[in-house]
Image 1 (spheres, helix red, strand yellow):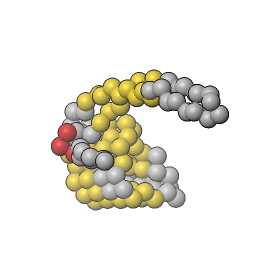
Image 2 (tube, helix red, strand yellow):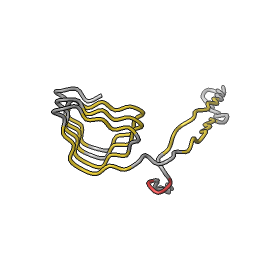
Image 3 (cartoon, helix red, strand yellow):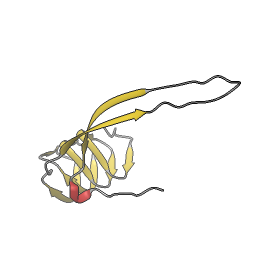
Length: 112
């Protein structure tokens, strides 16, 4: 939520977005509500956009594309530290599901 005294500049990804302040940038949300004091400037991807009387929207709208759910698994393998002849080991496993932006908006970054 962007409160009446709030201001956001940038790209926003949310399930539900309520704007009563100022939002400048692209928005991706299943439901977007622009309240009476809300101002949105940018491109909006949503399947449910509502604007209360007094609310302002300057930009373009598009239907929210289908998103895919990706299961991420992170695991830290055994790490051995040899301090004063002793060793420590740690193992962590965690699984999360994350919605990702459509393939057309995704960018790959290669790290060294």
